[in-house]
Image 1: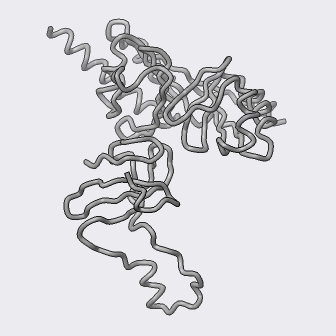
Image 2: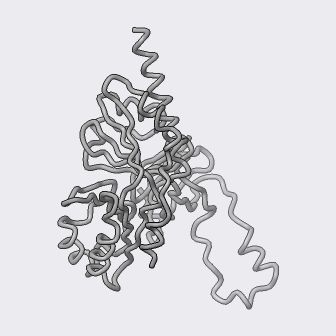
Image 3: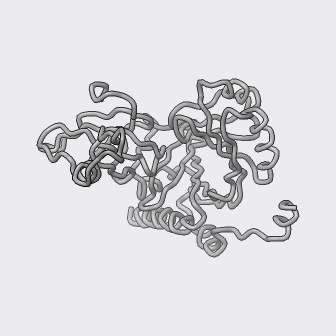
Length: 92
Length: 200
């Protein structure tokens, strides 16, 4: 089981959280200009890299806030977490 | 008119069916008590905004920080999130609380009566912490947790807001439809402790 540091509540066990997928996937500036392939890519295609990965989590059973986590997909190390609007470099 | 309607509709205590079992189950002085109805008012506002200072004057204390609860006058204020709090008071206070808090907050936040959203379970006694440990993963040991702290977490699968009121008293606020589930887990923990004692 992961222990995840909620930036608002502190460290809690994984069952309190819901996973939200890759972080920092920007909404297209002008969605109507996208081709079907580009739109599909935005909706469904995510990085599947080994190593440090920025992802979104929601503290569903706690403060109910969304935030970001850096997790190592190779080792499952929870490197750190940071609030929405903060930068990955702020993770702690 | 709403008030008249509310008076006509009788309220059902969420744990009425478990009352006898709850009363009969104790571990030494440790027991569970139902607090079926509480006035609960939700607050949403920017803690650094203009409403916070006005609210502090009405509440009689500053808004508490993360995982903290403060007692002020006849009510307690519980931290729920970075811009969210819950004011808890005795049943029947909700209308006057909403009115006074709404006038303090004005247009700078939200005030809403959430009294029917949660029912109360009070766990008290020397073994209260041991009972909680049977079904909740939060560490309530005095070195990391104590009176004046509150936590939103899970008891098994059910969400719960736990407010430690004294060294050995915890108020658990749960959704009415999950109250029997949570109470059964706590009672089961108490039965387990009873069994431990009887074999010593």
